[in-house]
Amino acid sequence: MTATPPRPDLTPGYPALIRFAIPVALAGMATPLMGLVDTAVLGRLGDPAVIAAAGIGGTIFTVIYWCFSFLRFTTTGLVAQAAGSMNDAEIVLAGLRPMLAALAGGVLLWLLQWPIGLVAIKLLSPPAEVVPLAEQYFYARIWSAPFTLLGYAQFAWLMGLGRSRTVMALQLAMNALNALLSALFVLGLGWGIAGAAWATVTSEAAISIATTAVMLRLIPLPRWQRALAQAFAGHAWRRLFSANVDIMVRTLLLTGAFALMTERGAQMGTLELAANQILLQLFMLCANLLDSFAVAAEVHGARAIGAGSRAALIVNVRRAAWLSLAWSGVLAALLALVAPFFLPTMSTDVGLQREALRFWPWLVALPLVCIWAFFWDGVFMGAVATRTIRNAMIASFAVYVPALFGLSAAFGNHGVWAAMLVLMAMRSLMLTLAWPRLRDTVPAR
Image (cartoon, rainbow, N blue to C red; front, side, top):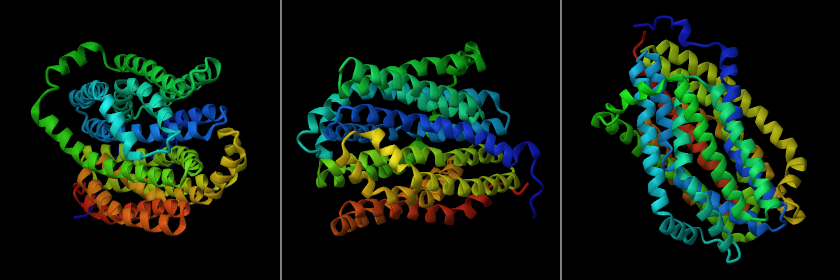
């Protein structure tokens, strides 16, 4: 049986995909830019230990928040599938459930902040001079937990509806507010590293309130209230948390990979740890930029799946794949050029700038290797095929751990970055091999 031609409304052309992806890229820049701004502001203090402490704190929050990443990943796919099947009631419910879970999770993190902070800092084992600074950062920034998690669900819901420009505007507003407050609190009021954390708390809370107002304009409050009565249906939560378990395993392993990378850098000294922190902040920015066409594939692929059209799914994946490949090459070229301009903005310490420059070629290589891992993640997230993503990550992590310890022992910090390339290459391979099976699960019509 051959596939029938896809519905035109389900298969946007290259220009439409680019128009969708540009706001996604700009929105994706906002969160890592918050980290870069904090690093740049803290770098004005001239102490590598402060940057290293922000890196330790940032790693802790990455691990914590990515445990709740299903709020972002599954929500977008479920909302887009509901939109593809034109199910208005499910569009509301697909956003309401993760928002309720986000608020509950954020309050739980508030209650458990002391044991979490104690255990996390002990596990990462930073140098002695970094520990008190990392504690200051952690115990201030933890107060943003409900707003951070709620933002995951809110932005994912808007993205599932194709509102990439709205998400971009909100994310950029959050980033601008964070930059202003970080400079004020750290440099103006002299609050040090805690000031950078409180800037993040304040900006995320403000934008969470603003996003709520936007959502209420799109769908009036009475419809949300009516949906609340149906939001606790057991089968829907089972589906959500079944996907969550898969994504949590995947995300814990991925964040564990970055945590192990941070731990290896910490064992090599404060300078290496601080250099890795600067490079990782820029890598996170690039990762979000690389995700732009992956999100396009996720949203439009999910709509095709919701409409039951294999032909539309194939067209969307093929077009987004070509655009992703081209975009990764552009980013790699830009990274190769920006080091002399970027590093002085991150720190006034010349020794730290030179140390980061030593490992810069690894950063340039990462987009070219990572692109397919990110792209296929988007495709499978849109299909809510989370078990495939989980299994690919388990296999990749099993290869990464011995590679990290072996290569770092042989080549020092160069080996740490080489192991990260191994992890991303393995993820790319596993998910590429799984694509035909996903494609064939969608009806050929």
